[in-house]
Image (cartoon, rainbow, N blue to C red; front, side, top):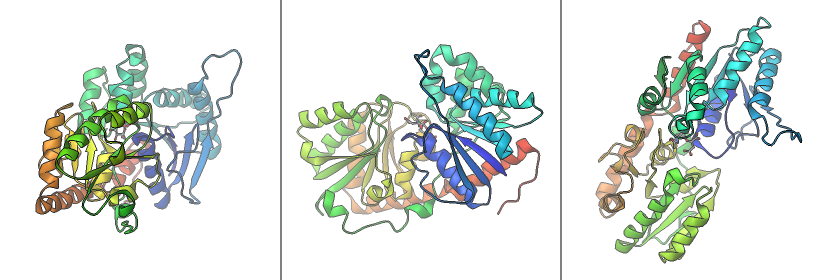
Length: 379
Ligand code: GMT
């Protein structure tokens, strides 16, 4: 199939999922055309089946705001027409689904039929989508999609709860390529961050308020009172300065390392003993799954789709949002007993196997086949 994938290129789960999906589809022989306003950060892979089309949003003195949606629509029309795409798969409802709808109508007026699949990733529904001014557009462009997927059962429920969506929403969970996380350990890497006697605790996010990175630091402070440990913070974003100040205030500066927007998160996870994800809301929690694929147990909140990934008492523990004492106590339950720790590590890995790309990719291919009304050969 010839598939157009639209995504945000930034450091965030939806862009990662879209890019990894495209890369895996290309390996299976599909022709993949990424369409984005800059090169997705995980698109670092050469394949004869991968093409990249940049949406050019030029400055024009009349506009205070650049018309991204129109530029994207124009690009979609162009790429579908000239690359003869079979379908569009747009990640994130705003404004990708509405741009796809408009492109579909323009192409229909020229006798070209292109179906579009919308994948909901969470913040498009739970945060941005809650802004009532977006409601009608989101609802319409979801209902008009030829297929809609959500990355967790919880997000599917939220979509129906928050919007008058009538279209069937399929749940297709996020995924990882388990092979990517195996045999990563670099023995030279761990001593760079911690002594043998110290545990390494890791958090990965885009440092937006919704991630409550402040809680990560507070949970770490409590763990640090009971045992020697280091905190590795991967990613960057609007809360970074505030978090740096908090670490200084709490006297943790020497025990916390800010590693920035690393591309090779798996290398840090490979030397980590525990992963913290304290989000206010999380439709899935791809970073938790990446940790589990690296055999790292997860201490997380119990919000959104997280309990579908991190199983309380099995792969880690889940607590109410903001319950720092509970999260710290759970972390210590795992870290203070090597037998418990190694059991949780195995459990985390085994759960991650369920979300391996080999189990998830055929679900997307089946949806593509359904909208195109064709049979798909599952390899
Ligand atoms: O969480 C973010 O800030 C980024 C956001 C995105 O759109 O990239 O992540 C959302 O999509 C990810 C991939 O499906 C999910 O794993 C995240 O849970 C979800 N974030 C939220 O719901 C807050």
